Length: 387
Image 1 (cartoon, one colour):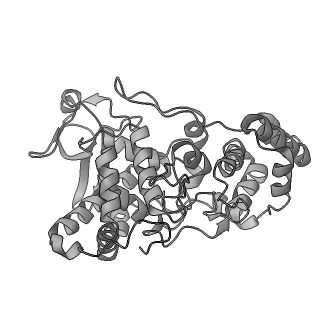
Image 2 (cartoon, rainbow, N blue to C red; image 1 turned 90 degrees about the horizontal axis):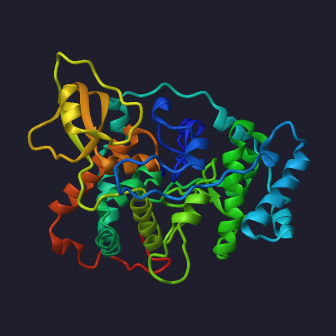
Image 3 (cartoon, rainbow, N blue to C red; image 1 turned 45 degrees about the horizontal axis):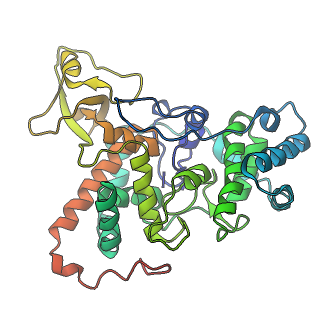
């Protein structure tokens, strides 16, 4: 999200590129070029759609064109599209370095896909749950203010940060300019996406001059900050969370919280809506594997396929189905629109369910703590405040 998931990036990018957790199943991740170039498909009437994220044109990315000409075309494309001075672009690119380690990382063969029973245990550990509780309590006022404004529960914001960067502790050590420069000009298969992100980086730092384009650090895919936003996500959907006129997703928590919540809202989060429901499958029926994660299947239609929410589980207008190997055998889940929204952050349904379950565990620990225990915990929300 969140450290780039080594194999997740080879298959798809959304808000983030993750870098220290095991990879989600490649088959569950949509084409990154497609997800970057086109808006999300319509789910149900009235669902808002995010704007498109442009990719770079063929004159920048065609490997048959000499590299020097592609770089020159990139300068022209970025200047023309985003109004950045050509000399500024050339000056920064002159400081960028090709990194073979980045190519090695992104082309590394995918690790064996972990089943849900193993994947879940990576995140549902006492240390990560307790860390989420402590992070929540230390930042409670800011988190709950954003939650009240957006409808995105605070525990989901915390869980995203916990999965993506271990609550801000692991955010990546690659220079973002090196990562995007290397992938834009020396990784032909993904060049349109990464050259587009490189151009977005120039546009972003023009809008946010406090960001040092040469000094920015992130994942080997160019994702930045506590929530691991790619430059396009940062530029299009980051929010100034405290009205100081800047959007700093590297360390400034009010901006980080507001931006993660805004990402969810932009992608259709339903205030107060359910995320998932545990389901049972009629033993006489075969498992249903939808072509996409879009929650377009009415519960009545899923019931005809043998899937029914368990007693006491939430219900919503439309759902998708995910089938996992759990600790006690097969698990069946109905994913509602808010589940789909989490998969816009990372296309893996296991990622989305892990975020959900971590969020629920964090909420349980927060609610179990006496309110008086929070007194004096929040160090403040000003830039540079302690975690």
